[in-house]
Length: 61
Image (tube, rainbow, N blue to C red):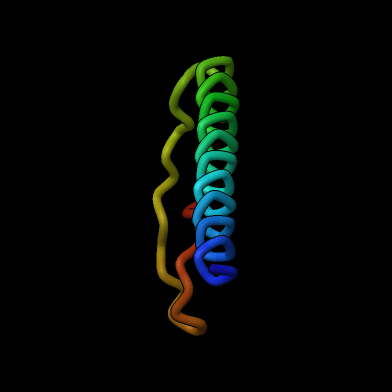
């Protein structure tokens, strides 16, 4: 019987944890979307070029 109660407690705790995480993700997404709208939408895209010595890509000047 204790196992059933423990399993039910874990299931309820997991459900509440998932709800809280989903709520937080939605809050952050709203905040990011509002910030993007305030800045005017898109940022200008920069062209990248590969550095022959390191192989890394860097913004082209």
